[in-house]
Length: 389
Image (cartoon, rainbow, N blue to C red; front, side, top):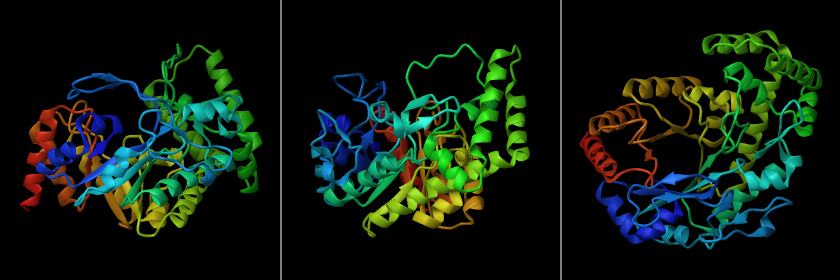
């Protein structure tokens, strides 16, 4: 069960673990580094709507393990008591869920290490995985939590280049969005990406100039690309522009090398799972620099979010992940047993059964504080069904 410190602290760690174990949950994945949000909490007796502090950590961090960029302790839960209590609970597996580079306070403070558009606009909500200080922060975070707490694994989110749409709050645009525009706006041309790409044989400066002109001309024009046309135009650009293709390959190399460094520095007995993307389907992770096969070869574990409204779509995504990884490593699956995905007991049972029968035995559910009590009951029914198989 994916969970937040504030939900477990309010309900009591021991009581929560007992409640979860009764429905067949034997593992908790706790947000140990997280961004801001506005969360509706159906089961909460106090704050029905919760606003967590942006970009903070929920464990007692050691500043000596970091470079210039250091983690920001959460003012309420930064002592790590919830994580510590979980790890000391017998019979329970515990994972630390780490949001690495999606961090607005750190991106704002260290804009030199943040993602930058072709126009030089710093995307302050995202540290760039090409920037040395960003990489040092990401590596330090994973080593810090695994050195200090007896976690069985870490689940790493936002290790790559974020899509343009997934970032800041109160986003505003009076230009109709489309895939072509978003993908171009999402390309990072910070000095580290340009330098690294140039060393890899990419004319990054020339590509940047083309991207600037293309976006400028589009925004100055009076034509909107419709959704199907925009996707086709974007794919045509990728196919016809050698530097764009090589630049995207360069991004994958950046992310894969960072994953490799993390796997090497974290204790061998600690599982390192990569949540590849927020994109649907999972194959869309390539744009963020997440090469599924390379990740599977590097860490051995892909933790895929099957955030889909039907079992057929979940099955299709799973088949494609297996195809792309050539069945290397292990696939973990995460489901949302509530709106907008699986909105009935039958849907949850079918989805869990589909993953189970597809070889995915490690199934997570998002998220304890977000879902109603009925969703917990649906999970219990689903786990009872697969455990009989």
